[in-house]
Image (cartoon, helix red, strand yellow):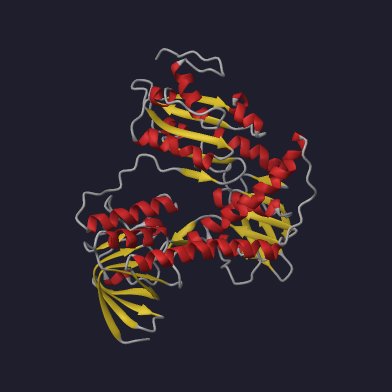
Amino acid sequence: MGDFVQETEVLVIGGGPGGYAAAFRAADLGMDVTLIDVSERPGGVCLFRGCIPSKTYLFLSELIHDAGRAASMGVTFGPPKIDIAAVRAWKGSVIDRLADGLISLTRRRGVQLIQARAEFQSPDQVRLHGSSEFSGIRFRHAIIATGSRPVPFSGTPFKKGGRIMNSSMALDLPEVPGSLLVLGGGYVGLELGMVYAALGAKVQVAELGDRLLPGMDADLVRPLARRLETDFEAVHLSTRVVALDEDDTGVTVEDDAGTSVRRFDRVLVAIGRNPNTRGLGLEHTGVKTDAQGFIVADDRQRTAQENIYAVGDVAGGMMLAHKASREGKIAAEVLAGEPSAFDAVAIPAVVYTDPQIACCGLTEEQAKRENIPVKIQRFPWKYSGRAITMGAAEGMTKMIIDPASERILGVGIVGRNTEGLISEGVLAVEMGAVAADVALSIHPHPTLSETEAEVAEIFLGSATHIVSKKESV
């Protein structure tokens, strides 16, 4: 390690979506920026061990499913021939292309990139571990964007090459196991479970709660739950796993009743994530954390230490890359003296299963919990011409609408390509659009986007492809 302490105006710790967005925005605003990450290239978990590799695999699994569905449409394909090494290589090429793009953007913006681990020694200086150039950096402002890590099963730490995997290990695609148990019925477990099922594994899910995807409205989850009855070997709800016993050939799993002991080739643990604050040296600063270890930050991403900011997973809330990116930009803008704050009303959430689920804004179940008066309208995709041409009639679009002002408060969609469809809902909620704004905006026909206009028309009593009547409220 070098013994030179460098100085910088803005130090960004962590190169994921929150970190590099903060660094790029700060540089664009004319500040001197240094970005530190433990990896050689920026991108973080999202690029290397999360969002991008998982969606690469999910796209391939959709191709396999679509090929099977095509038989009912008169086109028959043979059984897929899967070359795992080639699949891994394709994933690697996708990651490399995006990572190299980030390196180029870093250089073009004049952001200094250092591979090292940073540890605070004081509120204005960090020590660098693993750097061959500098021993430390003195800064005027710092933005912490160190992300999060998977929560291990109690008493069973993840180990390299082990059969008990976290999401990052599963995305390495070590093999296609004969049998796989997924612990956790959230979006990470279900997405990766569908990937492994499409590749030929017999997948089971064990969920502690009484339903899958507890953060989503139940009616959005039902079409996916029906699909999983076919794609997965079993889904066990209200099931607590109490023991995992790993050996060289598999994992023995026991539930809390002690009456059900099963054997699996591999187990994927997807039960949540913890913030990466360990080893940061926060005790040498005024930064505060909550009971779960997340850094406490306000709507301008400021921590209790006035010159240190926190963004992304490490600051808690919805652990989504796009939320982290927005927070990173806010932190940079606040540092530059701009009137910026996190005031998003609708943060879109997408589950990239097949069918996909997407929602934003107020949910139906949240409205019930908080006694918010709303009107719920749904448009089943069995009435959508485009959905029927795609063999995707199991989908549904819903809106949560204020009956008095007719403002759209939330949108939920289940079906094909909801990842793109939800953006119109986000815009409607953020702009305070009323149902008529969406209904009277001409949507192309035939498209899935029409379903958003149709559900708004149901509220207004003017729907074309379903008999509706506007109710008095």
